[in-house]
Length: 266
Image (cartoon, rainbow, N blue to C red; front, side, top):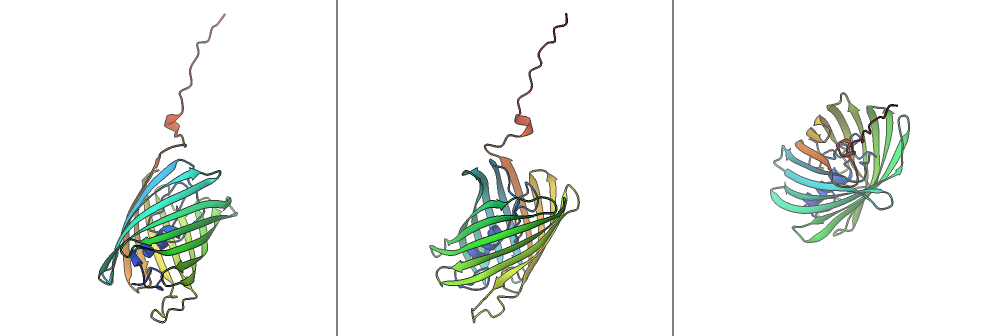
C-alpha cells in the first residue's frame, strides 16, 4: 500500500505518522506537536516531556490513530526525541507502525529574525516487520511578531523497500489570536515523484487547525485536511496533547521558599 506521500507501496500507516510527526512540531513555545504537518523551530527546555495523541477520519473511510510520547534531553545540546505508535486503515486494510524522531535547534532566532532546526526520523512497519522510511527535514521559522510566524520546510524522504526517494516541502502560518486560541494553516507535499501508479502524488496537501489551550500544558486540536495522504479525500482530525516536567526543568512551584530571618533592631 502506498506511503503517506503517495509513492512507494509499503507501510502506509507508519509512513503516514512519519509525515505528521516529522514534519510536525510545536506551534508555539511549549506547545505540543499533535496532528499538524509543518514543523517550526520551537524547542521545549530540557526535562520537558509530552504525550501527543490524535485520531484522523477520512471521507473514503480511511482511519489513522497515533500516540506519541517524547522528551527533551541534554546531549551537550538540547535534543527532542519523540516515539510514535501508529494504527491505521488504508484501502480497507489495517496496518501498524512505529516511528522515532529527533530534533535539535541549529540557529536560534527571535522577533523579526529567522531560526533554523534539524530533524531526522524513521518509520518501522510492524505489519511487515521491516524498516520502511527515513526522512531528513530542515524547518525554518520567521517570527513576524510575537504572536504570528511563518514556517518553511524542505527535506528528503527515502523509502527503503522500494529504494525510492522524494523531496518534501511545507509552508505554514501560525497565529495565536489569544492566550487560549491558535489558528494554523498549512500546505505540504512531494517533489520529484516518479511513480507511474500514482501520477497525482505531487498534488499539494493542506490542513487548517484550531488549537484550544485551556491550560498552559494541555491542548485540544480540531483539524480539517484535504488530500493529506495523497488519496484525494477530506479528513477530520481530533487531538489531545499533554505536557509535563519529568526531570531537569524546575517549575515555579518547585523553587525553594526564601528563609525569612528576624531583623534585630538596636
